[in-house]
Image (cartoon, rainbow, N blue to C red; front, top):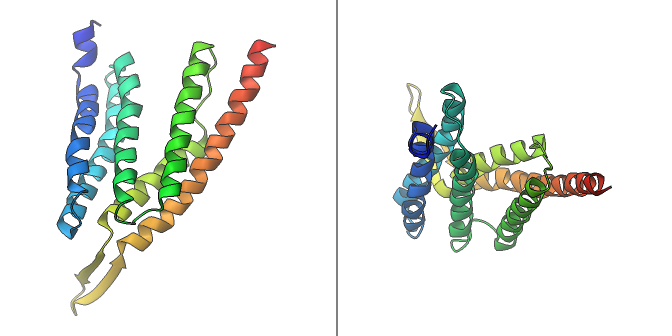
Length: 198
């Protein structure tokens, strides 16, 4: 597979698309309105869906590439970090929690680079996977933020949901899992690094 074939396949194009929507996503979050919140949540949701889909597609079509492996986690982190940072000015998330989450991501990314250079393979933990799931549930709720009303049934009953409360609940869970999984990864890295050097 040459570089062009390895770059321009559908899974990688979906990854490029996720990166390309980040500036649009950021601009939407400058506006404090229900319409902007709905559109930003829709973009985030689409990015989350394509994240799951492009990996599955790459494996199914056997077009897994080095570029795809490199860009996929970057695309994920870009849109998650953009969302969390842009949610701070409106007071939708505590700034100190966002700082710790971003610090954790940078530290783990650095440790992964060191581990890779030393030939150390550290598999993704279940905690890390759960952290990602809760983040992907929490962030759309925080983006939607406002109260929403649905009418259903023959008598047009009203169902009321405060999306911010739902989002912040899952965000707290995601925060605990983020820190916990980061500590777990650091412990694994330290143990495997010592074994490698022994």
